Amino acid sequence: MGHLKPFICQFCGSTFHSFDRLKCHAGRHMMKYAMACGARYQCEYCQRYFASKYIFQVHIRTHTKENRHQCEHCHKWFYKRFNLTMHIRTHTKEKPFECKHCQKRFAQSHDLKRHIRIHTKEKPYVCEYCQKQFAQSQHLKLHIMTHTNSKPYECEYCQKQFRESYTLKLHIRTHTKEKPYECQYCQKRFARSGSHKTHLRSHTKEKPYQCEFCQKQFSCHSTLTKHIRTHTKEKPYQCGHCHKSFAQRSYLKVHIRTHTKEKPYKCEHCHTQFTNSSSLTRHVRTHTKEKPYQCEYCHKSFTQSSSLKKHRCEHGTHTKEKPYQCEYCHKSFTQSSSLQKHWCEHGQKLFTSEQFQAFWNDNQHFQL
Image 1 (cartoon, rainbow, N blue to C red):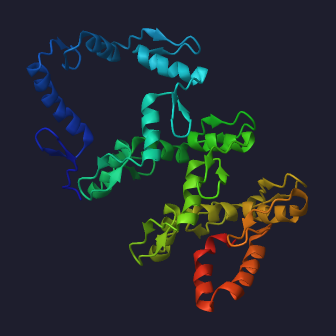
Image 2 (image 1 turned 180 degrees about the vertical axis):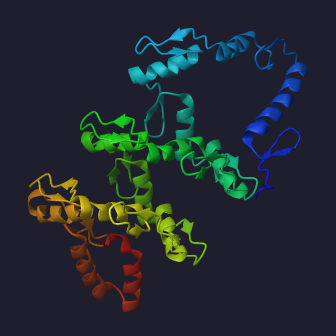
Image 3 (image 1 turned 90 degrees about the vertical axis):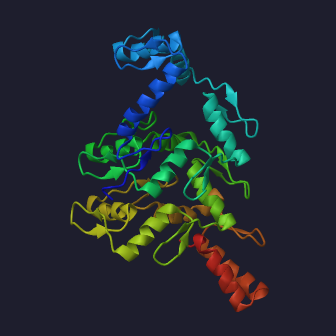
């Protein structure tokens, strides 16, 4: 792999080992192009040319660190007035751009443009290697790296390599234990802004994502995506060893370890190893005696969320909650096992033994 040069110059076709070398090389092309187009302003610091005096002046400030636009809320400075305008919306919560399909609002027009593609299914970015299409250019860029095997960002602690600088940044926090995002309600801290945002909804009870098939609502978009596959039966992730397919990438990743025998998660208390992080988390609680899942009705605590879910069913007669519904007669049940027994009654009436077995296999996601 040492001879691979995955970064290609779009002007002359030259190839490079690193993005930085390509960037430096492409700069020479851009300089020639700028001069040919009549660019009159040259930066004394980096020799770049500019045709616009305003853009030239803004660029100079990136070298001199001169900031001319200040936020009145937090006093942060910005090179450009536009960047200040976008920043101020983080304080005012202004979202002037509305989706005509679902009325969701956005602070910036380009965020709305990307969102609309969820509705229109538009995927304008095409991979030159396999013709797979993407809704966002960044997703295409990352996909191409799966063909070139390029991982330009390396962790200084463990030398693990990544395709994105942002992914590396998140990974480094597993070493530094940094958790910069704090919940305003319970002070719990998070390493990722997405996890923080999802957690906040556990307090606000906001569930902005709704299933188009059954109208069930979710607090997280990725959870909705996974749920929809229980309706469509889509399993887009296939094992390269045995060709078994999965509805979720994480399921495939864990499954592959049954072939490779990899167990990357080790208990710091007894050094037992596990194939997935959730198994390790559950195991560690046997040492720490932590029980983070508490029943809101009787305050009994549990080490696993599934145990709490089963326990809640005991309160079912009081809460009236019956989350398991038969798709044939719409009768609801407090426990999945009760739904499974009920299915058997349909199986005896509606199916042959072979048909019922196929029906049962297709509905394994209801099993605990």
